Length: 363
Image 1: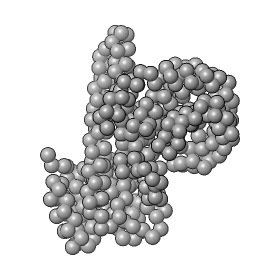
Image 2: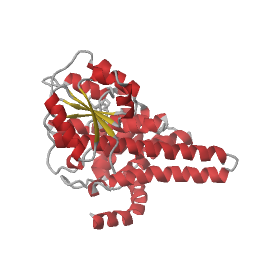
Image 3: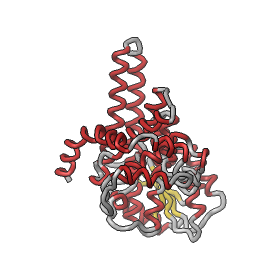
Image 4: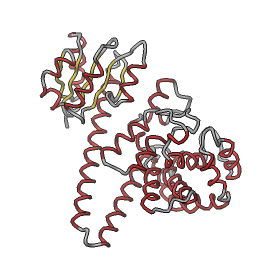
């Protein structure tokens, strides 16, 4: 099966011809243009492409405006920038603003091919999910007179989300079940803070369940790397909240869930990412999730250390109040006895044990 058309933009004719030939041999349908300006003058080039690869050797004035015009012309278009700038900040800003989806070093033709494959695959997944959720919404409307059927559809929706994150968890045996556990912790902690609206509580649970969905776009070579990450790999890891938020926006999930996905690595003291938010700037649901996530991380086994007890977790989270965590949420967490948190974990994970054993055998 041939991939959809790739638009290759490269001002050097020899490099353009060589890259086009390489990608064509790998079953990509390649169209070419000498510059972004030329591509923008040919609307059909951008409208028919699934992805565009753009080669630049130095920062070009107006590049961000041109990329914005490209995205406006075809919002679903994947943009891969082939560049190795001396000053990476302007290029990284393009990533943060969603004008560029990936950056590949010049001369790395295999990396370019992998990036194009990944980005077109992600967009196909987004389209499939969007179609699924559109169909589910239509069915909900058609069956709105039947409460029982509506509840059944909600269960299907929840199961779909859980299966999506279980599939992601299956990529790494060491963190299997993490999403389900932190979802339950977040739900309980939100209740301790006085949140009683069942819809809000459920939205927080869904956001916690999907918090790492952006890692779908991170290569296994980085996610499963046994040693420390280099700076470039760490930069890619830090993209997963924004990537996940982009995926969720496509399926129009609720605000609380999106806030957790985008902000779950922010710190109360402003030292987190991707936006460096601090204090009340961080959405409440993301501040709740941060404590729940830390509780699971401390009490779970990891390749680089053994799991620690819930009393140890309580003290470590208390020490992080005011720096990593919101003190008010730490107080609510501490009001729940360690043994009760341990019971929550047991009740959540006991249903996952059979699947975990299967995953280990499959691995």
